[in-house]
Length: 448
Image 1 (cartoon, rainbow, N blue to C red):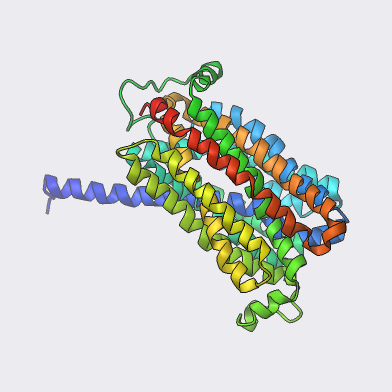
Image 2: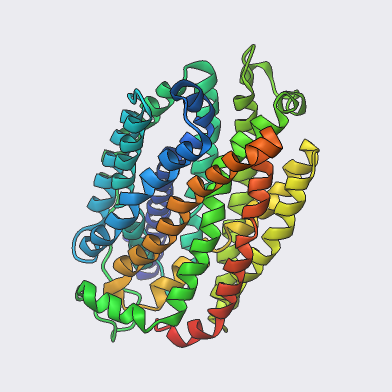
């Protein structure tokens, strides 16, 4: 029996929605693997420091600077390629590269070898994010992009939480090296599924016909961005938040072990024996504690940031800067309160709020950048944004907080990280002010 035209249209629509759901699912999974590979070292820092004998500052260099050097700089040429060639294949190749280098991290015999292995992870991940943003922008119309980009950004809290949970369990049961081996191999196994089931979308299909899809020269991209005041305010605002954000997320597990130690096992005494092997080290309890906060707070914050921006942005595009600005202001009092309390119970619930608020910018800002440049410049413009954000945030934040912690160890001992995080949270004020200043320019710069 043949279908009517209405039935055919309905069938095609359902099929299309199912496919779009699959594409988003796989992109989120790939991004999740990216953050598992990136963040797992934060929970493995304690056993790595014990075995390799490195200071907090040196650990920050291995974890932040090593990753950011090539991750940030190579992102621009890779994005330039993504504006011209198949973005799906670029993401697939990047996934294979960073997964292989993650596995190689488990072979490091000293700090220098681990430093260069982490550089390799950064090289691979340089090809993942900007092309993915561009793919999503060509699969979904403008009024849904901040929400969909926020959903894509779920990979950050999910990947961070999984990396922390998984790394803590593996470190307790099999050692830190095995943690790198297993997760690297799993990432490589994901590559064929991604490449065989995700299609390259048509560029600019939801945008104005006036917007050219002919690839722009890098010089043209820079000239366009130089005329976009909102781009620079959003970029440096995000970078200011990332300096403390990357640093705090990296050091919080270590802070929990040093400042609370055995209290962690008492607080989590309700966990079943199957989750807590006999003689489990404090790092495992820190993984459960912070991983849960990161997962719950991160997903809520990222989704609400994207949803509110899309909802309010229909009538006023400045919402894409206003929502993150307010969120950054709200982050500060919660971090201050959390770092001053000595109660683990209070700390757990208090930290949910700053984690949520500090990640609310992802959907709105990434969406805004997709809308203030022509279609042909999206991936490259995003890469320039990521270059600024990561060179300042990832490269500086982790080692900076590590150095401050080393300096404060003499007067404060194991609580040095408590006061380091307290000091660093002030940078969210800088981020909030820069985003507030971007409100008016963003309305002017918006073109799609």
